[in-house]
Length: 491
Image (tube, rainbow, N blue to C red; front, side, top):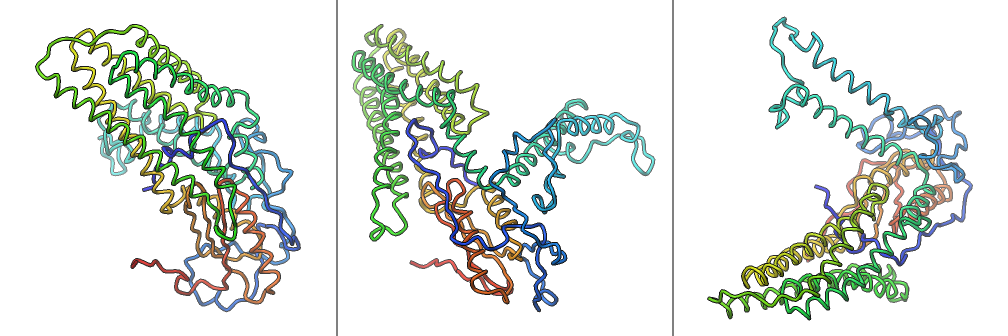
């Protein structure tokens, strides 16, 4: 199962752009960039061996030409859509015919109409053997959807199909974009030129700083343990950004002789330390709350009600609600804003519950306040431990997302006609960034210079993709061999 890495501190948006998108320029451009055609070099392995590697489509060598698969001047795929359909791609620019599988909104409506006809038409009321008993489609017969009425099953089936085709459309668009377009899209998604994005990120950061001060005042003036818990969560929100700033400064000041692979993983180590620090604060608050419950056992009074502290925390709650609504309008356009929206949603729950338990301890009975502080601290501890776990996955080297693996595989397949097969593609995390290892198969009769130039160009292309720190391209001449690497399971 693919791990969910959205909880990492590194992926949270912040107002300081600390990562630079670099582009590499090959020292040699004398090979053919890419073509739908694949040169048919003579190789005895082609006739006698059955390979499990991904093989490129082979056509006549006369069709091999200098067709640029990823021209820099190509515009964004999104801007090229007309009436919801992708632009017409040539065989050279779309060698595997991916654009043919793109489903427009009209085609999805036709699919919906076909589903309705299949469910309501006479053919659905009888089997092939002539029986008159109706039977739902296999896709909706199983599961909870079988308990729904007929129109409900049709709606569920259509939503499933629509979700499948929407994901397929996104995959096709992602594949057909050039590497330069992916870099430009990453910069666009980072919000470098989007005023609404800047308002969301900078507004959230400034609000967190101001609200942290308000929460400190509210907690200290009221001595409410529930408000102390919300205060700790509010303080550590802007401090996480400060941690990222110092970690990235240390990453940039690297001695290549001492750290040949850089210090990017220092950022992940800092995030893990930060998570455990926040968890420790929550555990301390749990201990204080438990101690108050024990010391005041048997009392029936209430705590002192302090109106200014409640107003201060209520202002923080209202501000978070405004930011929640603002980011909700942008969360579907930017993935980082989606993370920010989730943070505001969680803060709303914590602050709202903290206000209720604090006021409840002042108006109903005293033990509601420390009990609420324990509950909030447990929730915060769980959230930060979950974040620490995802950071550990990044540090250990968890596999990259399926979408990233698909993109890198497609870039390798369409890089050059000299690449005959793709043997292996491995993409995994090394801290916040990615390491890509690909094994490609080329003709054994090609010269060392041409083979090197193709592999080096592919390496530079992969390393220019967003979040890819290092790419290793291994060249082989066949796939009928044992894996070059084995896993060392012993210390």
